[in-house]
Structure formats: structure tokens, C-alpha cells
Image 1 (cartoon, one colour):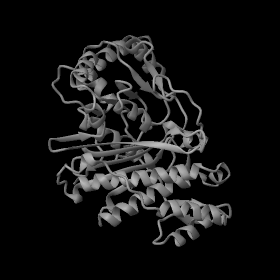
Image 2 (cartoon, rainbow, N blue to C red):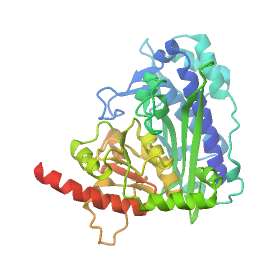
Image 3 (cartoon, rainbow, N blue to C red):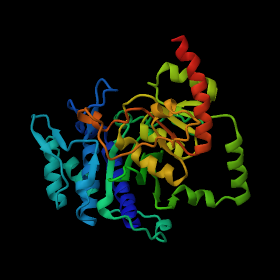
Length: 397
């Protein structure tokens, strides 16, 4: 059902336009920020914020997909609640109205009567977007619609989005922070098995025109279903000389040097073990979606995170793309406990079941942490080295 993936690409770009429009004026943007309520918060952050852009993006994705594929909305799940409170203390339910004028009136309540800002935002919300990938036109695949669930993270790395830094320098192509770390994540999974099927990662802020200060973005996608595996990076790779590609892949597979991207909040024991495995090739970056994207792009071998503060909406999109590339995202804790000679398959993350006994957002947390990878062979070698180097550290502790 590549029409669904085409539509997800289109709505992700519409979402990116909203994200860019909301960031265009700092004074307006400050009106759009609200602290999350208990039950919505990520315990990793002392103060956790959502923005009107988050909520708008999520509702636009839901409504557009429902309009194109009736009945799908009931299986679309997102990070954010669609309730916002204005300066008067009024609770407003954000939704996409049938006309631009009605949406502007609704947004005006959130924006304390700021008519021009409300109208500008409503215009972007209702603006039609043409965005597609010709590579999907030739794919004929039938995934029953009633088997599909969709996880949406409307704006991942909200803190970086709010901060709005545009002048951060990359380290070997990886941005430690800044707007480049902001992503829009849409992942489709099988509601019966929990296996990820399709993923879209839209990076709204990739390059900025220094004259107009306007941003351009980039979109990545992947599809993995019943033996069909296709992803957007294939198009870029296929443009290279074939022998060059084979040599590059062969060198990478046989190379003993690993690279990893991690969170700044990673545990010291993990960082110490990684230092022994990767040497200086450890990069820090913001945003779970962006760190996964670094693996998708081939900038690093591994994204590893030992805490339980990423969620299904953070990982589903990248997981689907990595599956299409021959990789995946596994439960870190289970990997470290798994005996390499047991013959057991790698514990891939699944997306259809709540965590028993958990409440609020923790119901959908990746409880055992995660490891994202592109090559299973590289992952197995990496895990073996990581376990060896964790053991003496745990003994010392």
C-alpha cells in the first residue's frame, strides 16, 4: 500500500512547513510553548514542554490521513495531547477545522487574540503540499489497512526546537545540538505483531539561506513488508559507481573501528565501555529521532541508549527504515543478557503492546533501552566487545 507511504511523505512535509512557520518569528513562537502536565511528561526532563507546533502537526497528520484513508485515524497514536491552555486559563482543544477561517478563529484563542499570527498559521495548516518520491510509483504492495497502526512524534527534540540555535557546527556531519536535531517521525507498524512496516523521518531544518533566513529540509523513508525492502537512501547510493559501493561496504564490514552516537545523559559505565570499543569515535547529539537518523544516514554504526526514556513514537519510524536497509533497533538490556551462542534471534523492539503496570507515557517506554544499527554482522561484533568491556567495569562498581 505505497499510496499510504506517499501520503505520509506529503503530510510530513506539510508538518515540516508548520514547524518552520512557527519558528519564523521569535515573539510569536514564545506564545506557542506550554509545559506538559503530569502523565504527559518524560521523566528525563525536569521541565518538559510541548509547543502549539507539536499539537498542530500531530492533528494535521491525523486529519489528513483520515481524509485520504477513512477509518485509519483510530489507529494513529501520538506523543502529545491536543489540549492547550491560553493566558486566560481557558482550555482549548486543538483540531484541524474544515476551513482556513475556522482554524484561524480557533488558533486565535490560543494566541490571545493575535489575529495576524493566527491567520498566517492557519494558512500554512490548510496549504496543499505536493511532495512525492517517484521511486514509490513502481511499488505495488498490499498491506491491509486494518492491520496498520501509526506512531507519530510530531516534533522530536522539542527543547532544541524551542531553543532555536541555527549556528551549531557539526562534528564529522553530526550535530550535537541545534535545529538540525529536530525531526518529525511517523512510523507504521503491524498492530497484530508489533513489527515496524514503514517509516518517514522529516528533518525540517537542514540548511538555512543566509539572505532570507528560510530553512530547507530533507525527508527519509523506508518500507519493509513480506520480502519487499526499499528505502530512500537507495536512490542516492545507486547513483555511485557499483564497484565503489561494493568496496566501501566491504571495507566498512571488515573494519574493526566502531562509531556510536549517544545521549549526553548516558550512564558513565556505558560511556566508559564505549570508549574502549569505539575510542574517540563517540559522538553526542540531541534527539532520539536525530540520533537514529545518524545511523540511517551511515554517519555512525550504532546509536545506543541504556535508559528507559525513549518511547514507541521515538523509534518506530527509524526502525522501519533500518529494517528496509537490513538493520533494526533492538532492546539493549535483552541483548546484553542474551548468550551469543544461544541461537536466539535479536530482541527487536515491538510497537503494539503497553508495558504492564505502567502509567502515563511510561506505558509506551522502550523499557530496556535500545541499540539502532544498520548491519547485523557489525552489531553482533559490537555487542561481543561491549559485553567484554562492561564486565570489568561492573566488577569494579
